[in-house]
Length: 610
Image (cartoon, rainbow, N blue to C red):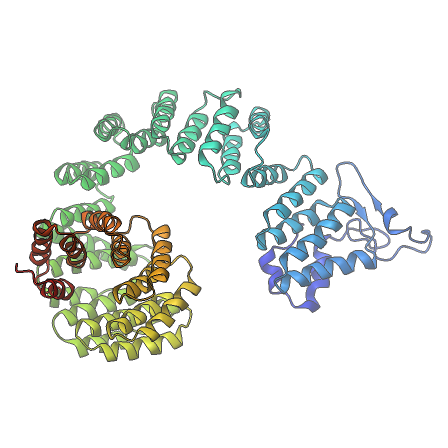
């Protein structure tokens, strides 16, 4: 029997650990009642126990025979109890020492689990090596040791080891899959690909379909799309009917030559019209290229071939919606709803996916109605959603639509009666209510709601962030800063909290060096975010570095030509004497958002006549 999983041990009370220890060694029928080699009470005729160093007997091909002395039992108990208390590394150290002494692979594996739970890669790697020494033919031990070595960057000889495993394996495809599993742990994807490339090309399996597919996938992961495409083409040459290979030729070819990739996919689907996954991928790509007619034609041809594939009808509706063919989308969705309703009535509860399919259809039908200006119809359609996983989101969408109609109190009542079932739904409801109130200009009420939600879900970074933004709008920077720092503590990768805090300081021309550090951190996390670029440009301007300010602001404006960014870029250009260019930027901003307060305040302060 394998040792119990770490998650199960976590919930054991200390009083149950002895039972857990017993489970590590299954009971066998020996005269003295040994636990698979660990003897609790020696029979009378047995000589007194030898010293600790002599109570272990190794048996070729079998688990070691270890006497369950008080020392062994105590150390197992101590290790397990340490893990229950969250001290995983000390638990792993104790168990690993015991594994070395006993040569028991189960103890080494248990030590590995502890080290992994504690995030200690060197300890886990050493445990895997002790496990492998104790069980040199254990495939799982071999794979684990190689994977952890790869993750630790210890790749010397790895290509040769993988090649030997592939060549010696009866199931070559499985062995190649295991090699990918090992190499996928390596942070350097290019190095991982090079190792696989060498292992496969030096093996006897280099011309297998699985080999070319593996190389294609690893090359793509390494960012080498041309090599990925070449290997995918080799795979398709080996197995011309393989849809998996054809899909790789298409997917990886899109990064090299999109037009040729589409031609290749069409050629394969013409020869193999049953290739559903490839044809769906092709239709999706055509839609992404806004070639909606071609995407619809592909789906229609598939539907004629498989008239009972009703999912195709929903996909056609999605394409029609994206093409702004709203009446066509509506007609297709109504047909789809009719079919799925019949399926739901014909099957027992829980025996079909029809309720989920109906929820998706109703959501899209509501969007069609909304885009057509039929908000009451949209609300009615959303009310038909009863699928548990979609019901709450549908109720919140109804509330947003009512708010758009100016029925704010009715909207809030709908949110309050939606009955959230978990913290995520509580958070979503609070944020939606705050948005409704904010858009209605009722900031104080929005703050009251978010404060209550913050108490109910104190670990929600989203609630704290939105509450901070409301305080910032009311110029209550002490409260806003406190909340933003709480968000950063909860989620150190929350780029917009660093940005919001830094921008608030820069905009008020306060603590500029601290503002620069905060925005720099935000930009490290999200280097392509135009709003963070805007903040960086603004703090650079405040610090007097106008050249850097213009560079950041122009890059931000090229990505998102919004009025707030236009106000900042225009002001910097104006101050540098580039007034014609500044006036052009200001005019573009006013055209997009005539009432933007930042832009209006900036042009008024600078005396710019537009």
